[in-house]
Image 1 (cartoon, rainbow, N blue to C red):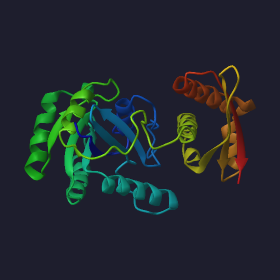
Image 2: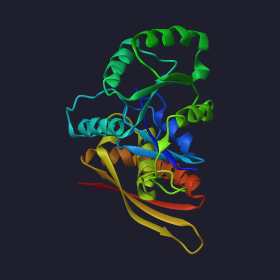
Image 3: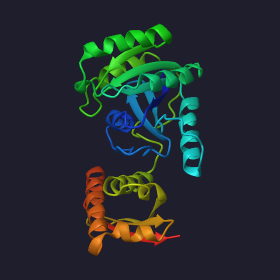
Length: 280
């Protein structure tokens, strides 16, 4: 039997559940999940193999079509369109509990012009009656060519297998790009840095999390199989250091302990995490 492939862009408004969905699909945490706007800065690729088919999922930044007013928004917009351009199919994910019709129509007007096949996925279906979705589906169908509609709950892992079955019908003959055991194009270092960035996002507010960069200095597997990791939190303004440290170092301690636990869950090893704040 010949190998098949399909490239899919997961698109949707910020907080629609894109990162949660891609993590559920690949079975590991490769994309950070947070309620703050545009936490997905990079173009994350998740790989899911279904028998002879390799599905490649691009987790794009929130499709709010940010005007490129600064370097960060330019990167977000570039990554968003790279995900679209690299894909064969668009999964447009909608938070079923928060549907903004004007925003949705504006988004679909833009996406239709890409000439890509579009599937609409209603996420968080446990928060809304399916009857309420019927008129919304009819309205969308009257204006746009949509391949099909499907309802899921990414957080509760409901409807995802059915979604994958339907997506698989669009796959085509091609050699696989990734090995059978690979689930992402990102290496371990990237994922560890993303976990720290996610943890900082969870604990700090306003502009701080968007003005830090993370670097790994040390990643060492010890003789007893424990893992020693040292990371730098690089800030561009010295005033952030006091906030990240917190009173008597309590904030950085909470961030370190939470992140250490997340990394341990992924690597199934005891983690010794050391953090340093650097001003550049």
